[in-house]
Amino acid sequence: MPTHTERVRPTVTDEAIDAVIAAGRTEREDVVRAVQSSTDVAFTWDYERNRIPLAKLYEKAKHSQWNGTSDLPWSTPVDQEAVAGQVDGGTTAHRFTALAQADGSPLKSWGTREWTRFAVESQNSTLSQILHGEQGALVCTAKIVETVPWIDAKYYAATQVMDEARHVEVFSRYLDEKLSGHYPINPHLQALLDDIIGDPRWDITYLGMQVMVEGLALAVFGSIHQMTTEPLLKKLLRYVMADEARHVAFGVLGLQEYYAQLSAPELRERQEFAYEAALRLRRRWFQPDVWERMGVDPRPVVRIMLESPPRAEQVFAGMLFSKIVPNCRKLGLLDAGDGWLRARFTELGVIGYEHAVDTGEDYDTFDEVAKDRARSSAGAQPR
Ligand SMILES: [Fe+2]
Ligand SMILES: [Fe+2]
Image 1 (cartoon, rainbow, N blue to C red):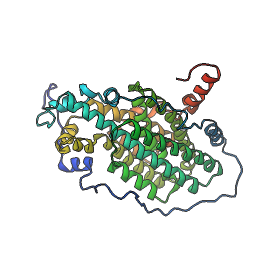
Image 2 (image 1 turned 90 degrees about the vertical axis):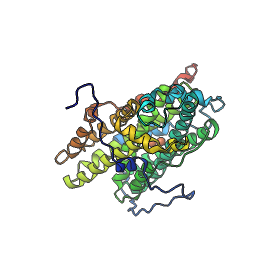
Image 3 (image 1 turned 45 degrees about the vertical axis):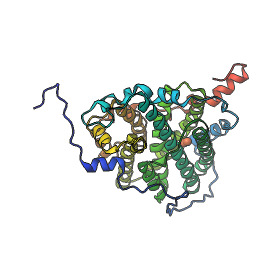
Image 4 (image 1 turned 120 degrees about the vertical axis):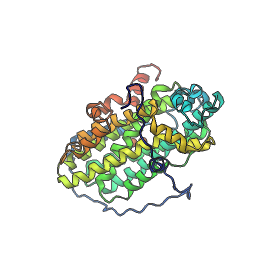
């Protein structure tokens, strides 16, 4: 029996490491990726506006549009090392202290210069994945316009297509003008987007994108927004998060009604999808491509991180599940059937988040665009 001062280290297999770094993944592919999808496109002849919460959300979305070109202070000079230092622990590397000191760590010799470069690369990578995820949202919401059978949902989804186009535009511009490099899409994110787009069931697009990927996006945006003082990035994130709060609300409103009519076996398929998606999203945290770009073999690094998860990984997982678990509860997915999803989230130790407050609760409170407009019409400077 280990004493309480000894830490029990899990055995990490080569397969577990392969799964994290997506070994065998194809290297960068052509500029255009084609994904097969065969989905019924739904016309409706029922134009009755009888889904009141969706109609209200649509009105809100029309009022809260903003312009990524003129509403953000693009002339702000950005010192990327300073921003990366705030967001990624930068020169202090405290995020990875234990990793750097572990037996066999290839990072033992790293000093301030390497950790600063790592923080910059990590930021390039994170913003690149956000950009790719936003394009996924753009494509998915265009698909929802086609496939959802309700007119109020088609109207709302059309506003979200515009929102997501704006998000792709502003993150792409930030990467090009203020940061120092792009990364290809993470294989776990790509696999999830392929599954979402390729699935013929219209609700899977909602569940995968509006609940799972948007949940991750909100977790990442919230943490960067909290840590950075860079005024352009901060305002960009405030505005994007205001839109995302509506998007999560749309996902929950749309699926609550539909899932109330599904059978237990049908719900079980949705539970399994949600669980697999959550695991995939969690894996993208390890950033093997950043270690590679730093000239470090990612395998020993990932092994050490799996044996002793860094505190920052636990914080990230906490943020992710604090968005996903409450929404699964609202959709009835936690307890549907024999409570399969509740059991899985309990095993992962994340069921405690089921009552966490998330931005989908009250999207009005998060409308930073409306707040800035009210301030400027009252003669005050927007933040
Ligand atoms: Fe978005
Ligand atoms: Fe979104």
